[in-house]
Image 1 (spheres, rainbow, N blue to C red):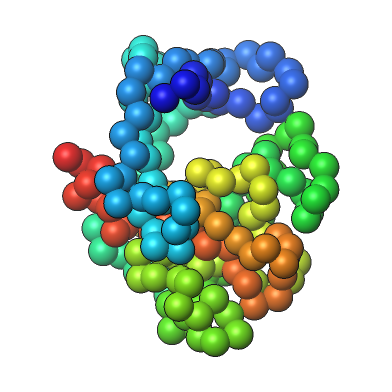
Image 2: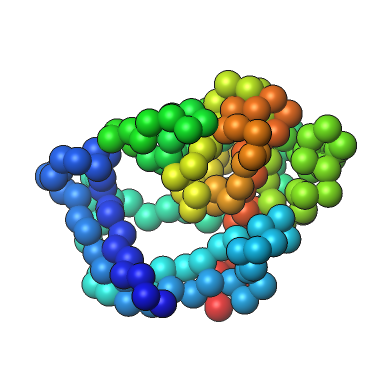
Length: 188
């Protein structure tokens, strides 16, 4: 409650004032009632922000599409994580928005012993785990975008957590809040 949030729209570089980008204040935030930061692996790591002002859409600012309620992505479905998080474990923070291709790891695989085990729940999506590309510190809250059969891009995940062993740890995929599990909550 003591924090002041603002949302950057249409931004690619954090250090450069880019034409067509905006910074908008947040008038209200709604955190899921079952979120507990002490028990991240319980899930419900999702919040909504209400912008203080309306925003005009442009070639740099577009609406995100939500997936249909209950959608479960197939194993190895290609998606992209984006963010300004660390480039590697304890690494530098980039100035330019980063993008990484991550393949979805289905729940049956991700919940195996040696992967995430019981730490991962069905209200989450796992993606990555190849030991090469992953989300990292500073990417939390960012999107996992996946292209649907109709060509539209949909936000299927919100970066939630990764391994304490490192960002790009083999068989420890990035874990995302599964947006399709929260469509009714989003629409309330």
